[in-house]
Length: 156
Image (cartoon, rainbow, N blue to C red):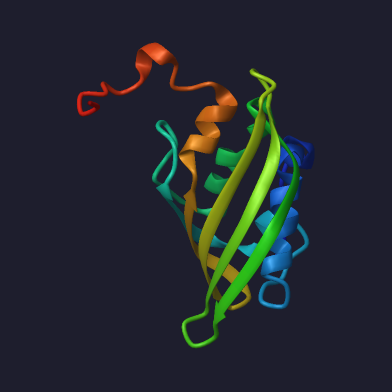
């Protein structure tokens, strides 16, 4: 069954990410769009992320709501470097990949690397555990500013 998304253009800024994930999961899942690949009760965990981003999201609709409007802050123009590791016994797929784009507010380049640990059951993603480089996000969006950096108490 395909999930109804009100306006697919809301997610255009993530198209390169969606494409590389479909490539990495090819033959294991069914569906045309990224959200079609997800089980209705999918769980996403963001293990290494950035402040203010949720640590856990449950449900296909909640994931879509989280990703809606991504383009207000960041627009991806490509994704590459896919490495796929599959364990048929546990139905786990590990995807390593990079995304490239630009931060909307600063105009700075955004280049990040991800490791996504994905569980697939009945040709749908049921669990997704994500790791990213938060420093790459900070470089792109310009945070933290000089006055908000942690105290460097331990430097000589």
